[in-house]
Image (cartoon, rainbow, N blue to C red; front, side):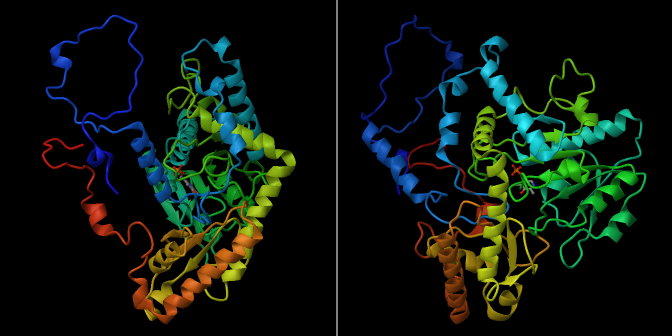
Amino acid sequence: MKLLFEKSVPGTGGCYIPSCDVEAYTLSSSYLREKEAELPEISENDLSRHYSALERRAYGVNDGFYPLGSCTMKYNPKINEVCAGLEGFTDVHPLQPLDTVQGCRKVLDLCAQYLCEITGMDAMTLAPAAGAHGEFTGMMLIKKYHELRGDTKRTKVIVPDSSHGTNPATGTMNGFQVISIPSTPDGYVDLEALKAAVNDETAGLMLTNPNTLGLFDRNICEITRIVHEAGGLCYYDGANMNPVMGIVRPGDMGFDCIHLNLHKTFSTPHGGGGPGAGAVGCKAFLQEYLPYDTEKNEHSAGKVRSFHGNFLVVVKALAYILSLGKEGIPEAAKAAVLNANYLKSLLSGTYTMAQSGFCMHEFVMTLEEEHKEKGFSALDIAKGLLDRGIHPPTMYFPLIVHEALMAEPTETESRQTLEEAANIFLEVYAEACADPESMHHKPEKTVIGRPDEVQAARKPVLRWYAEGMDDAV
Ligand SMILES: *Cc1c(COP(=O)(O)O)cnc(C)c1O
């Protein structure tokens, strides 16, 4: 497919600007470019076709099954988008006088209030722009708490090895020393290792729950008790709340602070490259360290984002919460768990599961043996799935499982879709067993085949030069 620059025909154009009703101003030549910008010239019709063609090449949740684990790529009712597109929300300015944006304030307050109720927290900030950003903010509160109590010895954060990779990164970015503790063979936090790791230098624990194996830690209350007894605080990575929302509350399990990914659980899809919101909730004793009202609040841990964060993501989250309601939210959670377990059971005889038994909203398969014995890998299966028209699961994550494929069907898939998808997974597996070599060339039916991932990472081509153009576009 040609780029717009290659399609450009001098003299064509589709840009109709109304005539200017203010006096022209001549900029000083020092601000002007020396040469005209080499912009593509293309008619409105051709431009529109260009973007439609691009759109047809993309694959999204509206195209088919998309079981990307740890991302929650689900169907989100379009009403949420409609709400976020209302002029009263899209056309406000963050510096508008407060009395003109009372509706928007109400959206923020109401959403924070519901999220507090769902998580069992007392206060919530909606400012952070992503999950990892929320973690960073949450750990700032914990740091500030110890600092203001003069408990300066507490410089260590405990992170189980089944946590999301952003957890150790967050600890380090906040200046803590990260202590990793192992999981038991069945995928839970090793309580003995935790007891051995806590002491008077423990600032806190960061726990991803459900963890990256898709398991709810059955010892969760014992875990928070051990950390609290040692004087540390407990941070809950709630990026993936959808299997537990409306069922259990981290605040009731002993957690002091949490972040949610509104762009996973609450209506905005993760991974689409768009804006996100990593809402951070905390118990009352941490509230004064939250990033809001930094001018008025001398104990605030500091500002983390301009204004109120990605406001329209919050509008979508509120629309989602209000439309599902008290009954619908736990129902969605149960359906997410049911769907994951159904798909897991359909695949279990063929694919090796990293963990047996029930999972939460996602499960992890391992192709380690196939890779060693049969000559095909998790990557080969993922690429084979692409040729069959479905999006592959997350690959090579979590890191504690070799040759991992992590699948999250989400609550919005029908039984029929799950069964059709399971059949495709089984067919691709059978194909790989019959001819492992052929798998290395997949996908063959997609727009591009297998890119050279090493070259793409080491020598990415980020600019395009046209013939005769001396400047990169
Ligand atoms: C996705 C995810 C994150 C990070 O969220 P981003 O918005 O991508 O920064 C953190 N923790 C867990 C468990 C996640 O699944």
